[in-house]
Image (cartoon, rainbow over the protein chains, first blue to last red):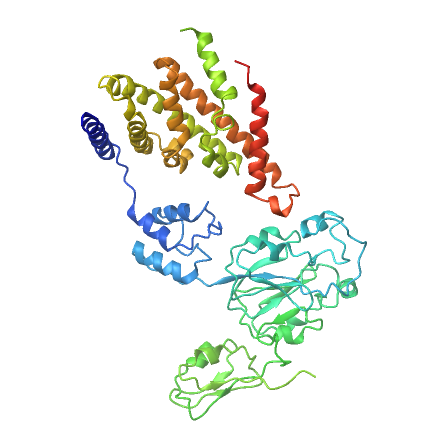
Length: 333
Length: 193
């Protein structure tokens, strides 16, 4: 009997002490921090630049981080955070990683036989790798092994490629590549230079069939001045690029890839056509055309000048009536 | 009570009767938190902290409350009660007063609430008939012994990450083997005190 009473008293005293302590030592914690943490993906990948989802939640509530910094969470998480914090979400382009090499290293000559550790980092320590190209992919797939989202696959050429649907731009592969071949690019952009070789044209061609030989054809054919050859390598300025694919079309070594035509049997893009019965003459297409190839007055059927059109496809996306058809017909030989 | 007496208690608790490797108490965090040296230090520090304070408080409860009313048999349940609320209290206090220490100890502080090594040390204090000073020294050195074992284990496990371990032993299997070997090694201290 007395045991129960004594224990009860001890318990009651401790309870009161704790209750008082929780008032006295109360620390204000912003309840929004917990709410934000709940909507985060909990991958703790560190892509936001903070130690984990918990610290990102704290930073974003305190205003030290952008609501869009969580790349794995993407749009969905950003808008949820915006709801919690009551702020307007600015649309941020989705980014993905891009590996700038498409060399078929099965067919490439080797400087020596590498028999070391089965990793790019190991191979690059040995005279920069066994391949004759000093700039390209070494082919030991450190990036694929490191990818936390399984977004890197191996192409027919045995080079690693990014699955842009799965990629969250977390940047893990960028850290891993000893050749610095991986970069970010906007998800919407469809044309990429798949080479990082700064060799001079002739020697680049000798080493690798799909190398950029710095011929400058892409630069000359670009309608918006978005591609430039610097240090014997073509580089796309994604701020200007309209994804028309002209550079990929003229590239003599296929160092530039047009995502639209990849894995299809089409050799080049066709220009779009306006379906006359559907066009209501809203002028949206003409306003959005980067090369001013579309003409027409308000409420009248518009026309595309095929000699100017670069087949970027922007008008097709913009047309509110779906009155522009775009089909590729010419097949590869 | 002499200084040498306290020294003997300390050496005994750290090496000879190491709480993890000789008494087999607190094995859960020993396996769970010994993956990385950083977290091993954090956990060890938190354990030292809580063990010392718990020793002192439970000693007072035992001698001034339980013994007074002839309720020695309530020791276990009363101590559990006291330790649980003590850890809660310390956590609240640290959060307010020493936020840096609170952050450093992190998740490990509440984890200790249910750690049998803490209950073990408080009950041993009473069983051995220590006085108040001896109790505090014993509690502190027991925590130190725990930290030693945890850090050694974490060091070994970090090295093992790089070793070529047979498939069947990977992970906890090899950790258990390592723990038993460490325990065997610590038997060498028997007879030191």
